[in-house]
Length: 301
Image (cartoon, rainbow, N blue to C red):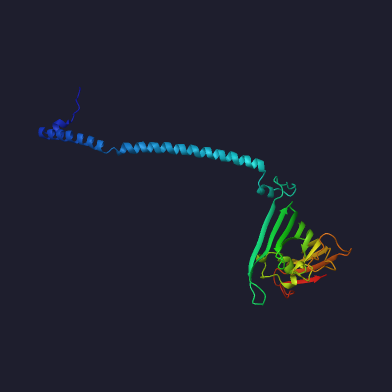
């Protein structure tokens, strides 16, 4: 048998007056919703702006990728031209001979200078601004063990006010290891600690002026501050005592020098005799019972 399913219809549930009220309310709400949608178009504007922002972000991402590819290509080209970086060269095994840098030895030039003002209450003296030393310090590393050092000083004479230049040091250095270091050329005698620790440039010294005992030869100094020859320095295996040695041989000073001339024999020695000097120093790393002081210098000439 065919049975019809019961159907519930709204028109049977609502009375005629109530159905009329629902229809009227729906007719009123639909125009109001349309008017509000027309008066508030922000949703459509936000969607368009969002699409524009997405397009802009995509363009920027493409530009960044292009720049990164160009940068990588440029770095690869520079690396191929310059060779392996210093870190890779330092990490080579000792069995591999060190390869010379493609750009060759680099020359380093440093400078020091000072200007002063002096005054005195002595009769006949004047207060003055004065130029000090203009020092050019030049170094160049030729290889792992071989290097060059030069020091040129320009200064004015206090009596004539004329500027002059002098080559104070010029050395070819060979550093074999901690126990043997050789230098050939014009150097400062290791006659005392001050002479080898403080060379030139007032800024680097601990005193306002160079002590009279270590005055330079052209300034009336009584000691042989400079020498031209060969010098050897290095450590002596001594544990915590920290022993060092210095051995020097050179032309020495001339026996007779005219007043105002430099007694250092830079080019030719006046005789066959040579000056030589040896010294030993001790710098203990820590106090010990056998050491009364932390540092002791013994010099023989």
